[in-house]
Amino acid sequence: MAGTIGGPEAQFRAFLKQGRFMLQRSRSTGQHLYYPRLAVPGSGETDLDWVAAQGTGTVYATTVNRTRDGNTNLAIIELDEGPRMMSRVVGVPAETVRIGQRVRARIAVEDAAEIILFEPLAADGEAAGAQP
Amino acid sequence: MTHPLRGKTAVVGIGSFGCGEAPGWTSMELLCQSALLALADAGIPLAEVDGVFAATGTHAFPTMNVAEHLGIRPRYFDGTNVGGSSFEQYMLNAALALEAGLCNVALIAYGSNQRTATGKLVPLSEAQPYETPYKPRMPMNAYALAASRHMYQYGTTREQLAEVAVAARGWANLNPDAFMHGKPLSVADVMGSRLIADPFTALDCCLVTDGGAACVMVRADRTKDCRNKPAYLLGAAGANWHRTISMMPDLTVTACAESGPRAFAMAGMTQQDVDLVMLYDAFTINTILFLEDLGFCPKGEGGRFVSEGRIAPGGDLAVNTNGGGLSCVHPGMYGMYLILESVRQLRGQAGARQVAACDVALLNGNGGTLSSQITALLGSAAAL
Image (cartoon, rainbow over all chains, first blue to last red; front, side, top):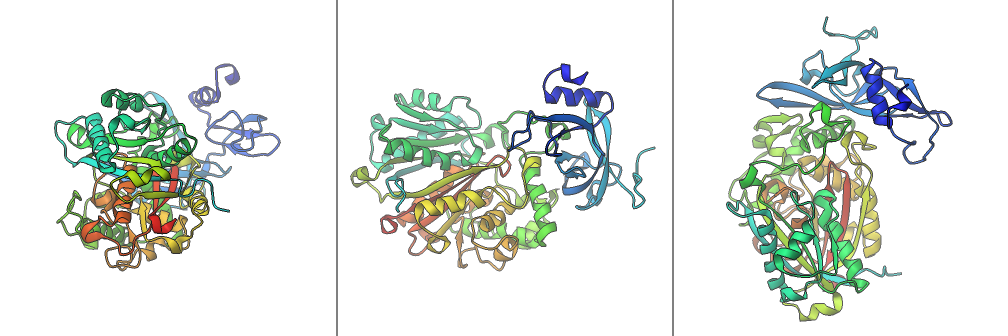
């Protein structure tokens, strides 16, 4: 049980390790949280349950790091549940990512740790440009 | 009713040393040399310093190092680090301590040798668990993300960002102490520079220099003994809404939308009273965001506001007259230099870049990734 292994961050990472992208949700307010916390920011409700994230969202802000090693996207994604998170949009050239673009989460492993990345959603709702 | 802190304290000494490149100097030496120069400028002996306010990018306990190096025994000290805005926060905290009689002479100081020691901006912060795994290049990426959103939401253009850099260079070319003095810059130069983090080119980003800077504050009743005209603290206030850029409530609205009105209220002033605007311009988008949030133009209009040379020499509003972090000096935490330039202008010591009839300066310190905002108003005796 994730609840037995430490604080909210450790629990979140334990879920990720199981391949699950989970968010906290307040029973009384219905508000979803990212990143994981001890209470709803600002109002302090502690009635938090872990629920599966829908995994879909919209690009809120985006930049491209242009280095000798190539171009890498960095973005802030607004999840459909409301919270925002930093991530990277992959599967398409970094410089083609646009604010307002619909994206879907997937869990990858980088530097021996699970990480949530996003891929563009095609108009039909399927991930476009995903790696086979 | 007049706020009890308004005009009760003043900056009476300023000093800076090693701005640009200072090979062979440590950060603490640059800081202490600046402190000694600021005390000499004020005409106050070192032994009278009993309040120390300091931050650096490299010292965990900077006030202890300052006290030890200078051989003073402060009875009030504050090393709270809120990034580049720390020094505006120290002015407010020093005013409180001075007014409460907890100290009589407050020294505020900074020093960094980042350029000659490392060649790059030295990050002083710990990993952020929900951002660091994505390998952001901080702080640049945070500001680039904010710029992307401002462009999307308000139609701010690449050219308008470039206008900020060009205006800063225009001022730097009137300031012989500016690192980029004598190097003209055009909008085309900025836009044609190497794209490093969309929408930013290399010339949208602040300098990486060395430098120390310091100021001395006393109660207003002590200023008559000092060598130079005092710059009175008329108002100051802070606001802090987030730490990491992904948790910023709205990437187009900074917390100085809150600290600005508070500082104006303490000073009993409005934007109309301001002769000089000193904004922490780590990146070109900063100037646009802060002009909007501080009420010099409506939200979303900042890009148009800075165009056609409006904030450049000869424009309608004097902004960042030293050349700013973009073209004058940026040794990692630039906030101290907002104070120094404001004081020079209020004294009438700014040479070719002197703003005519400069009696009120607004400073906006920025720390972290648009995280901490501290707004302050300094004024001449005429502004009291």
